[in-house]
Length: 77
Image 1 (tube, one colour):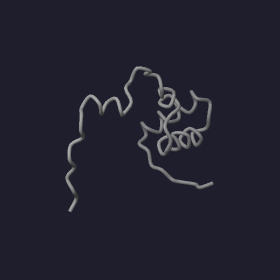
Image 2 (tube, one colour):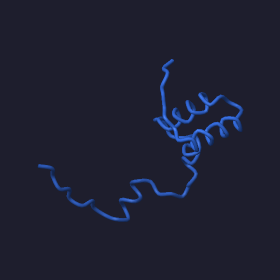
Image 3 (spheres, one colour):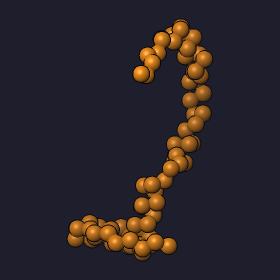
Image 4 (cartoon, rainbow, N blue to C red):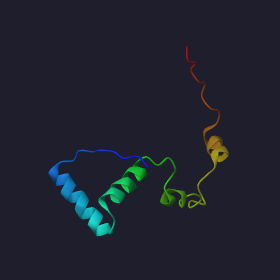
């Protein structure tokens, strides 16, 4: 496991220590959890739970029917 050194203002350190204590975890674990969440590459479960929650939302083909032919695209040179 890697060890990192970080620099925090005194006020930030106090708030981190307070938050870790409230969560009943070490400061190291609290910071590691926060860093892991911030670099996560998957969608949060709350977002995934929304999938299919709009049963009357039209699919792509229905949307295209309402607007007719797609516009011509410009090319990249």
